[in-house]
Image (cartoon, rainbow, N blue to C red; front, side, top):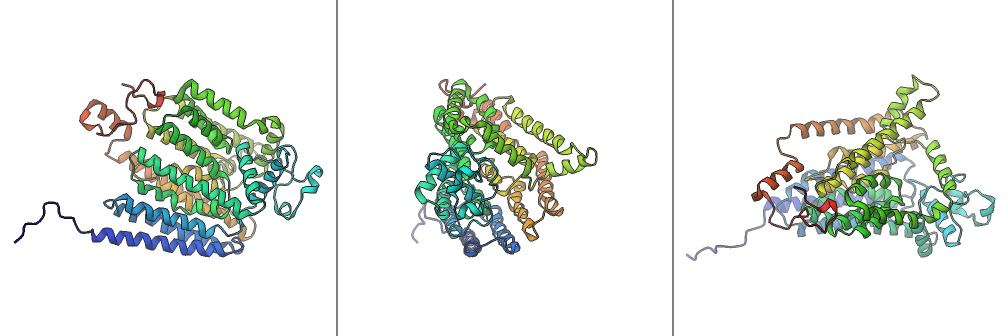
Length: 486
C-alpha cells in the first residue's frame, strides 16, 4: 500500500458547505423581499405590506448573522465575504428604482441643491418665500416644511449641489450617490475589522441589515454621508495615525449631522492640540455658508425641534410622567433632563484617555446610543449611526441594538390611520430594553475578562502578546491614543 501523504488536502466540511448553502438561501429570500418592495410605487398604502416585508427581511438577516455566519467560522473569509458583499450590492440595486415614498426629505434635498447651483445660499430664505416664487416646480409642491428654514448642514448642502449638478431632479440619481457612500461604509468596515483583528464576516451585521437598505437605497436619506465621514475619520486615525485627514473627516461628519458634534470631546481629549486645531479650522472653513446665515439656520433648527417629535422612547415616557406633575412646563423639563444626560455621556467619554482602539470605538458608540435614546425624535434612519459601529464592538454586536433596528419600522404604524398610537413606543422599546437588560446581566456574569483586563494581563505576561505588530506599540511620534502607557 502506498503511504498516505503527510499533508493530503482535507475534504470540504459537509457542515460548512451546508452553512454556505443556507447563507445563499437566506440572501435569495431577502432579495425576493427587496425586489418586491422595489417594484411598489407607494409603500405606505397599505403600510402593513411594507412592515411585513421589512420584518421578513429582518428575520432572515438576524438568522444569517447570529446562526449561519458563526457556523462558517472555519471557512476562509475569502469564500464567505464575497457572498455577503454580492448580496449586499444586490439588495441595494433591487430597491434603488422605487420612489422614496417613505419620506419627502429628498424633495428638500433637490430644492436646496438647486439653490446652491444658482448661487443662492439655501439658509437665506424659506421655500415658500416670495423671493423664490419663480423656482417653484412639481417637486416644490411635494415638499414638506416649506415655512421652515433648511436644517441641513453645509457638507450635506455640498452633496445636494453635486447630486443636482449630476442628475438634476432625478431622484434615482440622488439615491445612487448615497448608495455609493453606503458601499463605502461597508468597505471601511472591512478595513477596520481587519485592523482590529475581528472576523471580516461580521460586516454582515451592517451589509445585510434592512435599515440602511430601505432608508438609504430606497428612501434616500442623507445621514449616510455623515456616517461615511465618521468611519473614514476612524480609519485615518486608527490605521494611519493621520491627524490632519482624520480631523477633516470628523469635521465633515459634524457638518453633515450634529450627532458627531458630541464625539468631539472624546477625540480632542485623546488626540491633542494639533488635532484640535485641524478640526476647528475645518469646522470654520467648511461651515462658512452656515456661519454667514447662522441666525436663519438656528431659527430653522428651532422650528424643527419645537414641532417635529416622533418615535421617542425614554423622552416620551418621562414627558408623560411629568405631565401629571406640571401641566405647563413638563416638556421643557424633559428637554433639560435629556440635555443633561447627553452632556454627561459626552463628559464621561472624554474624562479619561482611552487605552486602545476598541475602547475609543466603544465610547463613541455609547455616546451616540445614549443621545439617540433620550432625544424627542428618533427616526429609523438615525440608527444607522449606531449600526455602522456595531460590527466593530467585539466578537458580536449588541443583539439589543440589532433588535431595535428591526423594531424601528413600527414608526410607520402612524400611517395606518395618520395618528400616533400609544402602544407603538411600548412595542418598539419594551423588547429592546428587556434585551438590553439581559445583555447587561450576561455581561456581569460572564467569567471571561473584558478587553481592558486582557490588555493589562498581556502587559504583565509577554507570552500573551500577539505575534503581529500591535496597534498599541510604543512610539513617541504617535498621537496620545496610539501610545502605550505603562
